[in-house]
Length: 394
Image 1 (cartoon, one colour):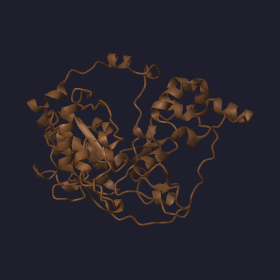
Image 2 (cartoon, helix red, strand yellow):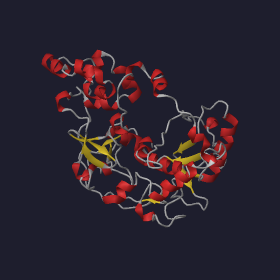
Image 3 (cartoon, helix red, strand yellow):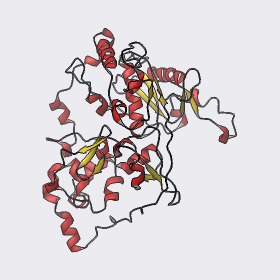
Image 4 (cartoon, helix red, strand yellow):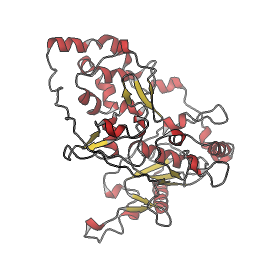
């Protein structure tokens, strides 16, 4: 979401900065803000196989509003709440194609600055959440109020997302149309947007609260640099999924960054790879030597330096086993940075000069560090499948 809105300029020069105030993961039924909305119809049900786990999106927002009012004193200071759920969201008329719901122009309204988003997985969920955030900022669907912007343009605020992977239609999915920009700028000029003009915290004070391992000059990492293709597949599908290694699938799209193909590791080796109607790779995902994905295009990585390139001794272990937060801590240790040189380079640039030749030393000595060399998952063969084009309604 931050990457999507960071490229938008409002009033020709201003950017909208998104900051995460906090997260709450619901693991127990009693803690769920929507427990009375979701579970009351299932209390006396014994046949769980026949359940359709659906949720009325408007009822969900109402329940969230009540929950927020009760817990406002313990919640971190915030302007907007996004509720992510795996339940199938329904529109007011019962349509299952709805993927999100939010109120227009209610960003600073404490009772209605809420959106509910169906967790489709990976970048798709981020696009839906960005769409609902646009509603809260005053933007309507393209083609509804201002007819000069057609819904067929497939911009971020289009009423439904196209599954096209070629041309402008795909690239527009990460942008706001001119009409959406005007709606948001108009909203920002009203008193209803007062919460967005709060005094910003100076960069110096923000630096003081950072981890000591990320002090000094550094650039912000793209999501794809922190979560590789395998991790994105696990987020989009399930923990037993991984990146599809069959190039035939990736060649189905004009650019390999425009559709993520995943393999179910619990199925046999001839089972086909899977994807979803709209599932591009995250920005920053490596798509070739010295290349990465940005807005669905595999382009040159401007930060790639072949002279300073180093390799991980076990790529699967270093890339997929630990979270970005854990990597920032572990990479400070010399022994770990030597093993996971390439991944640690993303988090602690000042360590690389010292440890970038570690790979040669390890290979020369032929001494594997402890249990680092886990057997990688074998390349599984897959067969061709066809993909039907469908639309996603917001």
